[in-house]
Image (cartoon, rainbow, N blue to C red; front, side):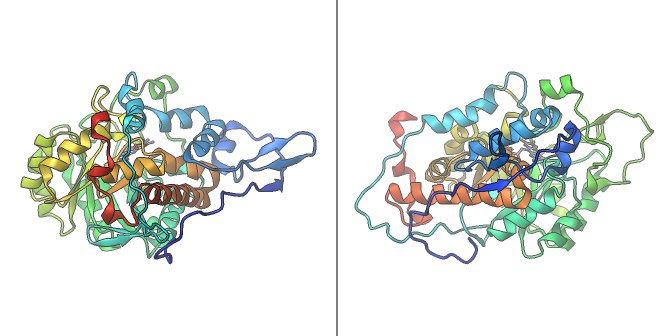
Amino acid sequence: MRSERTHAVGRPAKQLRSRSFCRSGQEEEEKTFSRKRMNSFDREGGHCTEMAMVCLTDFEEYAKEHLSKATWDYYAAGADDCCTRDDNLLAFKRIRLRPRILRDVSVSDTRTTVQGMEISFPVGVAPTAFHCLAWHEGEVATARAAESVNTCYITSTYSTCSVEEIAAAAPGGYRWFQLYVYRDRKLSELIVQRVESLGYKALVLTVDVPYTGKRRNDIRNQFKLPPHLKVKNFEGMFQQETGAPEEYGIPANTLDPSISWKDVSWLQSITRLPVIIKGILTKEDAELAVEHGVQGVIVSNHGGRQLDGGPASIDALSEIVDAVQGRIEVYVDGGIRTGSDVLKALALGARCVFIGRPVVWGLAYKGEEGVREVLQILNDEFRLSMTLSGCRNVGEINRNLIQVSKL
Ligand SMILES: Cc1cc2nc3c(=O)[nH]c(=O)nc-3n(C[C@H](O)[C@H](O)[C@H](O)COP(=O)(O)O)c2cc1C
């Protein structure tokens, strides 16, 4: 994707591939960590036919079938009744497009820029935690995939590879770093210094987690990182007694619930990187973000994992775009599963979208290659939707594409 500048539509569908396959009856845990391939077993011939991965939900099915239950539940989780998580997807399906015709779409171009950097298409990788649960190389594989398709990868604080390992694995990759504010500000400060010196290009401050949302299955499963995995960025940094309560790999109560706009100013005072706020859902907070001089906002409800009952992020997008009036870039994540979802988000004013769960499904399928496939499929679908609605490039996408009466 990196080298493609313009591209004629109509790629061949993904081919069905087949390969000999021998199932070894591994234990559940081993299945999670060392699985290299994933095929459906043809009992008659002892052959296996790899599933044709045609759309992102194929990767979801694969992941559901092959990850351990606790890992699948952790990735899939939403808060409480999961209304907001599910509405993230349903809301996209409610939006209808107004395609234009006869516009010569024989040549198309999906490139755009975010924060002044060119990316090959307007889809980046949202920060998600614990990639080593899905694939043994974890975030290193994700970083390589994002680099190879030339898009932005927002690395999570809760990575199971360190920011140094990630940067070394994909030295040419375009990366932002996602940050939380900790009670011990020194911890946040140290990680900011590390990512700055490693060439991460922006800080994404996640603001919707003063406390962790209630994810029922994680509680039922007593979700814990397996002992061989760590939140690598903080390895050895917490002095805690053995057996002290942990939450998602770090000591409980490490995040600071007193975080406020003052901390945004504090963060700006300790970095020269652009600051982007992730987790904005209202025009009032978007206005405050602009007033505080941040360079971008991500309209996000954390994939429905925090407050249940909040809006689908695509439903919140328009009021934020209207409030911001082009003064800073607006991005959105949550429920993006198809190219036409990407098109709808851009038509409603997003500069770029980010995907969370589909990336871990890609990892579960085939590591780096799986993530690349997920991104490539989304790019192909986006290009197709864009051209079928009469747009040759992202600059031609605007709100006239949306059937407002259906909103
Ligand atoms: C398993 C998982 C882990 C996540 N970890 C983080 C995280 O560490 N930091 C963060 O800001 N957001 C995190 N998120 C939220 C994502 O960045 C993003 O907002 C969300 O996944 C987008 O929705 P989608 O999964 O429907 O694409 C996580 C989401 C999931 C599903």
